[in-house]
Image (tube, rainbow over all chains, first blue to last red; front, side):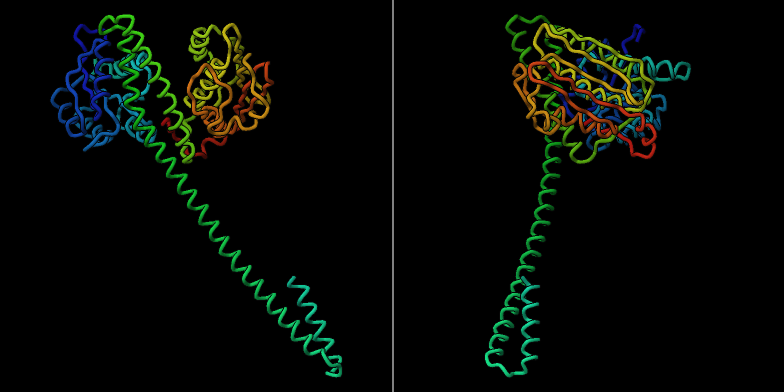
Length: 138
Length: 308
């Protein structure tokens, strides 16, 4: 996150107020929210189109669930940087998403400052782990 | 009743046969006794039928109540879940506005948004408690244990507790013994300690002290939170870890009285014990133990998490 160019982020959540809140948080972190999706199919389509540095992905989405979306995305972009959003931490689903390649998860009721810290830490850890592998994340 | 009438009947028949019809009146006595016996048998049979039907009705009532309870838990879970997401947003947006990151606020605007922020934060805490208890009640409390040092864990959280205490002008003291690493679910145990500390803060007057201690006894780690609040009357102590139990009025804060019930279920799931010692006027001590035995059992248990 030290690059001059703003990191590009995509937010996928079926609830508009959740997308708006995450957008406000990311904007305050000097990120550029390049696109938003409100269902699973739209998420896969827009991700392929915009190739954002980070995808914030709600676990429960209409048309396609979080784990199905992850499978679709990682098939074409094995180095994608995805952080799951969840309102109810059904740990079984979260673990499945982490196993599929998601970098971390955030509970939606987490205080804002903590969300920022989790995102920063996860981003740094991800960038470090992917250093030199041609990852899409900054 | 049945036994004695049968014995009487046997005596009568024996007597009748021995008398060999020589005495008059014996046959009518025998018939009366036989009728009595028959009536008694019939009565017994009817009572038995009644008992059977009552047992069946009772079993069916229990089944219905259990189904209704499950339905209630499901409803609580769905309602709490659906409320939590919008409440998180209300709290989040009010926090952003209050930080004035999107523009300056007048004093009046700030005051109103502070109310929105505080109310939504409290509602979110209530909803989270409801969701937790519905998950626990449905038997879905699952742990995600990690091998960690409880000392380091508590030291890290102490900073946050200290800030919360200072806001209420309460001094938090820590006496944390070095204990070896052990298996526990950090999210769940953190939730228990958060609850004990926040209760202590709620019930403490400004200028008083709260003591957080970690010690070790018989290979068990013991975490205690002691306050100098009003204490808990003995009549409440027995049911304080039950659901929807409250005592006193801590600074008008809303609560369902579920926090300690949740804490107890979490500690039970870790095979530990939680207890309270208190005398009105001298404060309260809430303690829980985390036994090392959990380490041996954990591999056999299904693990998971339901942080609601």
